[in-house]
Amino acid sequence: MIKLGLVCISQTLRDENPDMVFKTMTRAQFCKKPRNTSILELSSRILHNLIVTVETIKQCHKIGIKHYRISCKLFPLLTEPNLKISLAEFLNQELIIAKLREIGETAKRLGVSLSCHPDQFVVLGSNSDEICAKSIQELNFHSWVLDTIGAPQDYTCPINIHPSLSKFESPEKFVDKFIKNFFQCDVGVRNRLVLENEDKAFWNAKNLYTYFHLYMKANYNFYFPLTLDNLHDQCNPAKNENGEVIPYKDHYLKFYTTWPVTPVFHWSEGIDNSSKHADELTVAPPDIGVDCIYECEVKAKDKGFLKFLPASNFV
Image (cartoon, rainbow, N blue to C red):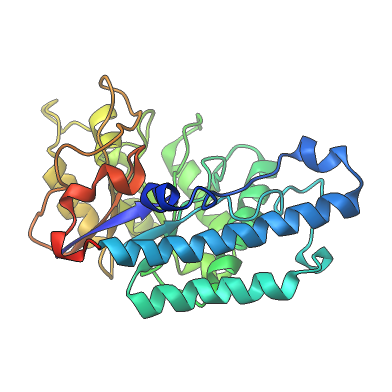
């Protein structure tokens, strides 16, 4: 069975209600006013974002979408180390916690599975110890959000990250540092973290499988579920020993075996042979004959793949 997933924003919901948009706040905006004033405004925006999330999950169910990637922008500035913002400062803290729980309850009741995808600056194998420490903090916060909404601490609610686009001494040393920092993360991170192939540089699908599955399994008796991104594979193809490009299906079947549950892969189409996402899908994600959830990464969001959803689910 193939399920199609929405990434963060529902354009159909936004069309129905223009207020259903996520609100953010920059560091400059926060620092421009007295802290108490900025805290009050920030907490109001966060509560609004959580309300939008609940309504987005309901919209997914309404139009036949079975999976939703939670936005990583729900809590702007809370992991900014220099600002040291705590939920305890929010006068509406109880409302925020209650709304988080409502997100999980709504998703469970409507049969919509969840995931999240922190920003690309999360690099557990970075050459910078400061970046590694910040990455651990960021992942722990995302795990706290998922724990608070009541999401299971397993790969049915994955936290997906990119390995890295930066240079490193060797892939083995990168993975060794990565796994060392990984085991410093909270248990909710350790039970959910998955990795996807990059659109450029070293971590194409083949190298990701070689080092984060085979090498890690041999040296640590552990490995990560791997998320296959078709567009990244097109932009950064892997080749076999004969110099031939490895087919997508070959990667798919290998990555599939790394998941103990139904895998969550990414599907999109590019613009002008680049990794920039197209407005909509012209081709449905492929059915390889095994269960899979595809997060559809298109600019038009749910409007970009409506035609591939079951017509009977439309309202």
